[in-house]
Length: 254
Image (cartoon, rainbow, N blue to C red; front, top):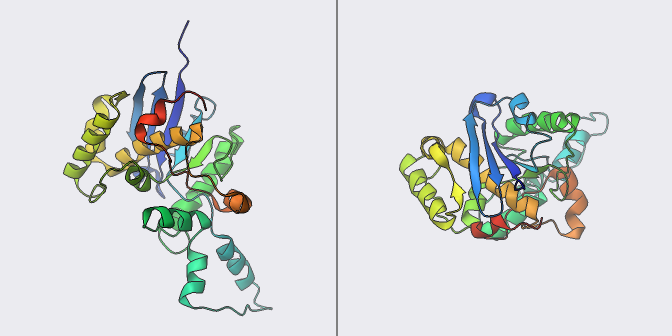
């Protein structure tokens, strides 16, 4: 009897294809294997996996803060100008989603603001990508609770697994050490010849980590939105930050 194979995909999304990395990981009972890792991916290259994978982890905000959306909609009505605070704390509510505040509370670091940083350009592409995934038959739940898509955050994922991430985005030597640590903690993970690409490209490494984080999301081993924030998470998106160590990813009871 052939052993069941489960696939997860990790996407390090950029505003344009040339900065977008995609990793595909196959999971069996006692091992996982990175079967594909590539740079320069179009939306079509990503959506071709819909139907053959269990979860796609996307490193990008899947939505905007509710307060930001309401403000922009109101600001467009020039006949009835809004009375707004304009102060620092008010601006912060527009800049960050509920999931961003949750990640900050747990990690001590703020994710990039989808409203005020360049991430917004990537999120615009991501909105189109989510539509294309849905058109291909993939169920999209921005909260990560169901469906094929999960929002992931590779840097925070690595820190949740107690890996030192200082300088990994800019220094190949740091990435190489980080990859060695991952292989030490997860000897069942076969990265094959793509170790060199991951060392050379932070995007490739982040895509691989996104694929691992997607596995945690598939297993339900992540910090889910509290019930009072579930509806907001379905609109804004929710970072599925793993609550398990990397060694627990081989669990087979999703």
